[in-house]
Length: 256
Image (cartoon, rainbow, N blue to C red; front, side):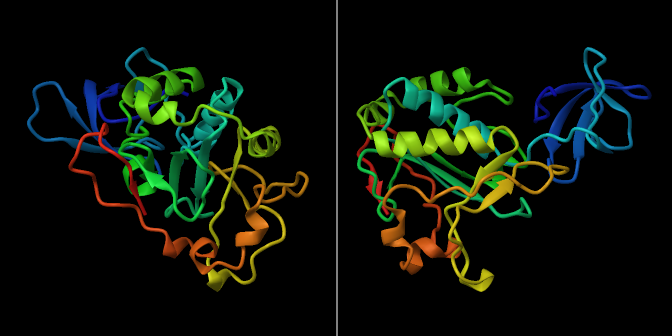
């Protein structure tokens, strides 16, 4: 399915060609401007027979786009591991509803509690649902190879810090990707109100209509069992994204 994002050109049989100005991937509602009209028109992709500019139907109800990018991020990290960037890590804590989730890429030492934050290397559902990009200059719908290339161009200094070997984590991550992609992702966050921390890695589908995961139980990352007693790691609410950085990406990392 082609990407649906602000700037996508569409066709409506009663309005003609238009451009999407706003989108919500959770509900399927979009705002679009047609011709020289000043006001935007609200449309629902499930019922209003909106098409792409080339005539391809947008079957939002049958094949909705992924409301979270975690599977795409996993595939990109996996490829970068194969290229020698094994010190690149994905801290992922989505929610089953798809409404509240976070992701964070970091490099260097594998320290889950004190992860370095770099501009463009983290995101949230509130942003992605309205504009399905990662935030490092990528375009909607980029392939795994394109995402990796765009990240390297956006922050070569940051990606260079991922060069190196972490074979234990790379092997674990490859095993998890093999079991979960392309329909599922994992979560490293856990709310106390959900009960005890499970023995196996929590698995969550990345889109609606995907059956519950029935594959083998997956282990937590290497060294994670030593941290399971930490409230900081056990609770998704304890991890908060930093405020947007005012400085350029070339300045030193700030550690949370």
